[in-house]
Amino acid sequence: MPRAKTNAQMLAELDELYRLGYRGHVDFVDDNLIGNKKAVKAFLPELAKWLEVHDYPFEFTTEASINLADDAELLALLNRANFVGVFVGIESPDTATLIAMRKKQNTRRSIAQSIHKIYAAGLFVQAGFIIGFDSETQSVADAMVELIEEAAIPVCMVGLLYALPNTQLTRRLEKEGRLHPHVKREDVKSADQCTMGLNFATLRPRQQILADYVSVLDRIYDPVAYAGRLQRLAAMLDNSGRKRQTRAQHSRRRLGRLEMVAPGYFQPARTARSLSSHADPVRCEQSEFDQPDRVVDNSLPGRWTVLARRDRTHREHDRRARAGRRTASADRAASVV
Image 1 (cartoon, rainbow, N blue to C red):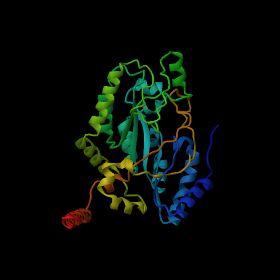
Image 2 (image 1 turned 120 degrees about the vertical axis):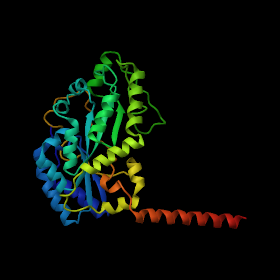
Image 3 (image 1 turned 180 degrees about the vertical axis):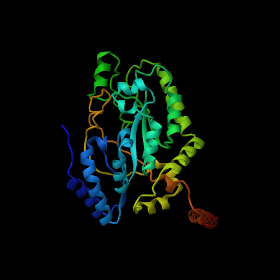
Image 4 (image 1 turned 45 degrees about the vertical axis):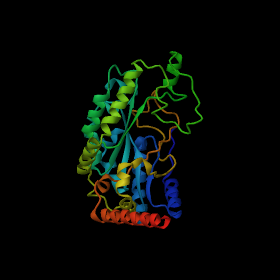
């Protein structure tokens, strides 16, 4: 049955983070924040007031379905409440695959144009893609890369399909005799989609699926391609209407180039499940790919317009730091001699 925290409960969590002295990025962990639009639209104005009273200590990210792009009012509310990014599960460019996943909302639109609408509202997008579905009759690598480039999404989480316990997918594969026995690996402390995906006999040759996976990663994270998407995103991301920059901006300036190159290393604070654990009306149809109790750890980067360039002050600071290290090394060497 639908579950939702009250506005007071969520603001109390932010009060506690604030009291503990944390400032910066907070992720609202929810499979689809806009699954209950009535609740989220009632909450966001209160969150905006809270931010103003507390001098904007936080900036937020979350996860939502692609039809967020259809609601201009909601996008404006998210902007005013200092949401700077959203994770969107695009999953596949293949229509048959999206229908099989019951993600029909992804088939009724231009994905790229929808992403660009979200950019125009001042939120960057990180997207999720999966390779290895039964509905893939041929290579999906080219179409996936083309979509990522057209939409100008710099950071994409591309994974191999994994049949999770207690899902329709797992039950179907088990019934068909295609599910592989679970292998417990003591050396792996947490699951990842690279080494633990495709835990079933695939319909498409496994080698082709893995070749697609490698091809997509190689091409989208080619430095030139990645930088090109970053530049196009920076040109489309409209933060002109954002009332106040968060204090987290200062920490990002200090981190500079490192965060842009390796955004996943910077972990956000995470709230508990927020407004709703249920998807929007389209996704309420149970999909065999649904994850029964998924908590997404979105290690999202900061606002890309800030990270796209480092100013002279930072370069000069780095130059002096390197010079200081060289001097210290020379002094130590001289003392040893």
